[in-house]
Image (cartoon, rainbow, N blue to C red; front, top):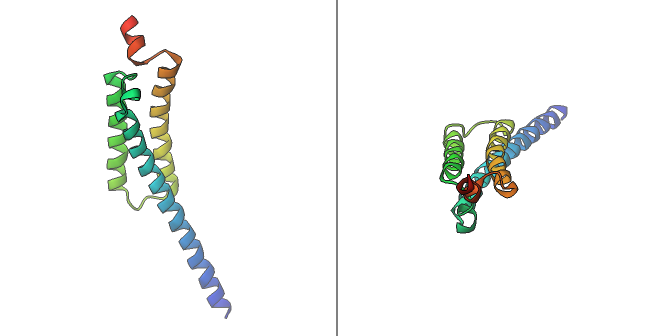
Length: 109
């Protein structure tokens, strides 16, 4: 009987690991597509430069290509990739809202 209990715990741990991996993969994928939709929103797009949009799109494309090549990656790898994408997007958006970036600021210079 003790063997079956340990085996069940082993499978439970594997299941939990698999769930974490799937959740992290889905979070990265959802984030990438949400960002893509945001920059296609005219209100946001009108405040970004073409260079900013390209930088974000390139980062999204890179993340999606990475996902396609790394379906069996571990949750921490998915999380790292999502943080990388968040960093790029958030820095551009922060500049836009602080007035140090975006189309309006670039025209004034």
